[in-house]
Structures are given as C-alpha cells and as structure tokens.
Amino acid sequence: MIRLVAAAVLALGGCSAPEPTPAPAPKTRPTIVSLNPCADAILAEVTAPGQLLAISHYSKDPRASSMQPGDAARYEATGGTVEEVLALDPDVVVAGSFIAPATRAALADLGIRVETVGSVGSVADSIAQVRQLAALTGDKAAGEALVARIEKAARPSAETPVDTVLWQSGGIVPGEATLVSELLARAGLANGAANRGLGQADYLSLEAVLADPPDLLLVAGSERGQGHPALAALPDTRIARLDPNLVYCGGPTIPRAMAKLRALRQSVAS
Image: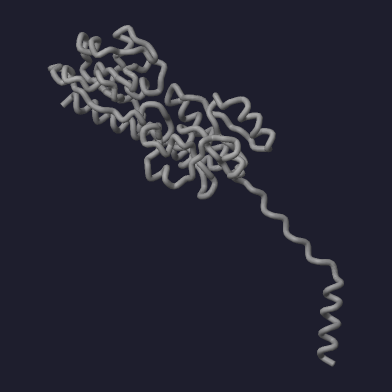
C-alpha cells in the first residue's frame, strides 16, 4: 500500500509543470582579444582572470613587446586574423586605430565589437587611454590604481635639464611632441634633437653626433654607427643603452621608463 501511494505521488509529480530554469546571470565584464601591443600591457593590469583571451603576437617578441616576458607568457597570442579571433569568440576586440577596414567590417558582421586605441603623445594621453580601457573591462578601480602609479612615477624633476640625445632604432630621433620626449623632460633630461635642428623621426648620423656631442647619449638601437668605437672617445659624453621597449608605449611602461631615465640623470650628475 505504501508503495502504491508513493507511485501515485511520483506520477502526479511527473504531470506537474517543470520548475523554470533560472536565467543565467548577466555578463558584466566582456571577454577581450587585443591586437595592439601597447594595449596588451594595459589590459593585462585591468582585466579579471580569464577576461583577456589573447594578446597580440608582438607582445611575445622581446624585441617588440611592451610587456614583461613573464606577464606575456600568461596569455595566448594571436596574429590578428579574423579566423583566429572568431575561434576565441570574444565580446570585444581592441585594436589600433589603423586596423584594416575589411577586418573591422568582418568582425562587425560577426557581432564582435571593435574598440580602437590611438598612439599616445603625452602622459595625459596615456592616462586617458588607461581609463578608456579600464572602463571597457569594467574595472575602473584597477585603472585608477595604474593611473596613480603613472602620475607618481612621472612627477616632474626640479633638476637642471641635461642635454640629451635619444638615438633610436634606424638612427632616428624623437620629436618634441612625443611621449618619450615628455618623459625625458620629466626626468630632468632635455631632448637635444630640436637644438640640433632635428624633428620627429629625423635621421642622426654618427658624424653629427661626433661633431656636436650631447652630455648624455641614449642609444636605443643597434645600427652600425651606434656602436662605433669613436663614440667611446668622446670625453664629456656619458653613453648609455636604453631598452627600445621603453620608448614607444605608455601605460605600465611609463613607471619603468621613468625609473631608468631618472637613474641615468643621476649618473650624469655624479
């Protein structure tokens, strides 16, 4: 008799309407694929675990990366093809402002949002970019923490500027309206390119350096002339290597670049 009652109860339960399946919680943080090497380093600091699905392949190359090797190793890399991005199925792709129109259109057709970032020419530009990406990831607090580190590291020096030439890859020099030129100034180093009649990406020859040597020559390239023995014979010029990876990106690169530049400024003064 007890078994019959139990069977009846089970039968009635089978005829009743099923409990509704709870709707999944809304996703508050989008998944992201980055195709921009400068954005890679920022996103690594303002995303939650698992949110940044992949970084650009440039960040896996020590010669082109703005990330520390250990940080880059935590992420998968992509060459930026639509097929690779689609396989990762992100909500958002972060790309440079020069992303190919066909790539952007293809991603849009697939329902993938594209957020673009431009190159930064100042500390203020970099801070704005950090806040842009932190707002995108949903972690504004992490963005403000990075901003605070940048502002602290980039506080202006009160020391007398040292005549400095930054000799970059390809033998070129930076112009005045560049992020690295501002970082030089904030570290107490004057960008001597303008005083020598040179602007953004102008070529500086070995002969020109020898004819008008600066107090500090920062070599951030590996051209033949940049390692010429004649440079070592300059009596009043301090020559130092500067990692090219500290030259082009903002974000978390700024504190590292400023620490190096301030140390170099002190080496000239001592």
